[in-house]
Length: 327
Image (cartoon, rainbow, N blue to C red; front, top):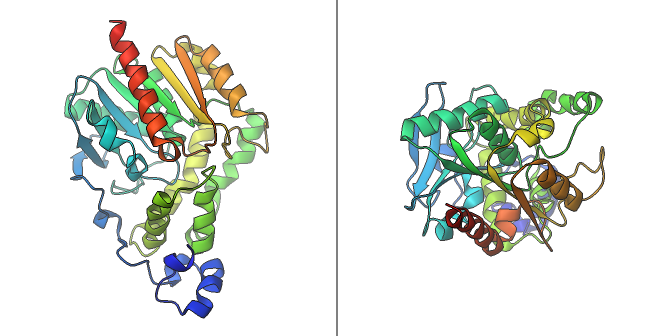
């Protein structure tokens, strides 16, 4: 796979180059966009100018009485939902967004979860949306929780996939996490193709071949004009999550909530600080949220919606159908 993402390098040196040469110093993979705006999302990309200064990129596919807003995770983009939108849009209106600082959305913004929550509120106001379901992965899950807490009347359901925010961090632990946001941009910017690849591998129990497009995109972005701003957004997102602790407020969540984790998640819980298992995290969180349920997918890592798309889509459909039967 590594030789596939270091095209135009002599095969005798391609593996060594993939391991040590920064992506931005190698030719980008063939048929890969080197500017964020040039990416092909498979559906028409829409844009909306929001009152907080964000030019938000989003997809709007499908129709239905239920509207689901999909919020991607750390270092990701709305293509993270490419294995979910085709199926779920048959029954629901599906809106997938690029968070500010990511993908095709504008950059040069503050990176806090409060800002992200206000962005979702402004998007809903601009599109005339109410009673929405928020579906978030990882960072997006924590953003969804905060949005639901802040805008209770706007958000009807929460779907939290490998969600951050469901662990309690002490003040000392948050202080230890803060330096990640202050790392020099080159720390992230000059990752080699092999480092990028292994970073994605860590998200899965068994990385599917279909995920390789994300690796190629990430390597291609190293040539983008706004790549530094993207790198800064990723690094500052660590601090954003640490500073937006929602665990103590979980009993105040009013929305029906579905929590889903992969049994072999490499990132949650934080193995360095907490240890434990995702089973413990999911169980404790579901007990703290008044109207919550949880699922654990076996043979699945952190990237639940991409690694287990059929199971994820079915779980979301059952969850929302159950809500309809209770009306």
